[in-house]
Amino acid sequence: MADSVTSPSALDLSTLVERHHVRIDGERYELRHPDEFSLIEQLRLFRQAKRVVELVTILTSDTATPSEAEEKEYETLLDLTCRAVLDAPDEVHARLREEHRSAISRAFTQLQSETNSRKRAGANPVTTAAPETNGSSSSLDSVDSTAATPSAG
Image (cartoon, rainbow, N blue to C red; front, top):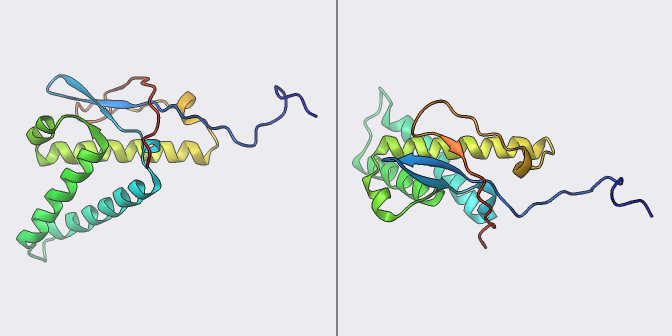
């Protein structure tokens, strides 16, 4: 039997996640980590994001006139996505404008993309997470190492 210290691990799992945060009116609110979502929640967020992209294409088209229903659907999906990924009270979510929700959704998408890249590279997302910032106050301002267990899904 091989020594457990020197033998390679077939799988390296961690139940701890590192949450990033955003600042809203000077207060810090955590973004849920992509690993905290169940597979069903991840698929739902993916479908919502795909539809938001479709709606943005329609709403910004020079050739088509978007309907009120499409504009409302865009606002609703953006709000639902933001509420799913940002851990903040309802009154904070109610104060957010469309551009805030869009920036929060993009920050989460960036985090999700970085997390997936690290997983594909075989890195442990907890110990190698290095947040990237772009100086924008609505993006990933900084990182807090907040140990949280994934929610049941």
